[in-house]
Image (tube, rainbow, N blue to C red; front, side):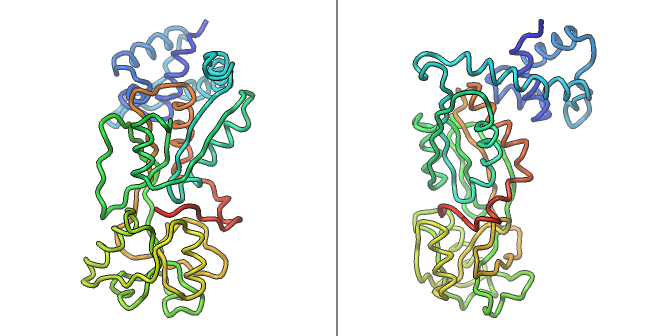
Length: 307
C-alpha cells in the first residue's frame, strides 16, 4: 500500500521541482523528503526523478502517479478534518491583492469542483495588510504583490512563493495623445494628472518613485481605494491610472504599457508553520497556474481592489 504522506510529498516535488522547496512547503527537512521519495520509488519499483544541476526532474511515472493521487488526497484531506473544523468542512481563509483573483481563480475553481464541503472566505486588501493577516492567524493564505521600486521584506514567519512578474500599463481614454503608442515612459507622462491608489499603499509609492526617477513629481488628481473607481475617473478624463499590463482593459479605456523594468511581482504567502492539506493544495495549484493566470477578467472587465 502506498503511504498517502509520500504521495502528498510527491505532488509537491513534482510541482516545485525541488526537494528543498517541497520540504519548505510541507514543513519537513530536505532529507526527510528525499527519504520519502526513495521509499516511494522502492514501493513502486521504478525511478521517479532524474537529477541534474538545476534540481530534480520528474519522470513520466512520477507525473502520472501524482495526477492519479490528487483525487485520493483530496478525499483523505476531507476525512481528516477535525470536529473543530465543522465536522469535515474544509475551511480556508484567503486574501487577495489587486489583480490577485486572476491568479487565485484556478485554485478556487478546483476547490469548488471537489467533493469536499467547503467554507471559504475571501477578502481583498493591501498586500501589507494581507501579510499581517497571515502573521496574526486571521488568514491562511494570500496572493500579494511587491512593487519593484518599493522593496518589501516579509516577516520570517511567512513562507513566500513567486507566481509571476507583471509589467505595468497606464490606462487612458481612446482619444488620449498616447493611446495609439505601443509603450510610453514615465518621462513621457510628466504633464499628466494621475488617479492613484491610497497614499499609504505601495502602488502610490511606486508611482512617486518612478516619477522621481524621471525627474518630476506626479500631479495626483485623486486617490481611490479600488481599481474600478480609478478606471471610471480615467475614463472621465480626470487623470491617467496605473494598472497591471496583463489585466483586462476596462471598457472605454486603452492600456499602454509603461516602458522599463519596473513592475511588480505576484506571490502567494502563508505561515511557515501551516502545512495543512488545504493550504498546501491551494499553493501548489497557484504555482501550477501562476505563469498562465485565468483570463476570465478579460470578459468581465473587473479589476478589483487597488494596491
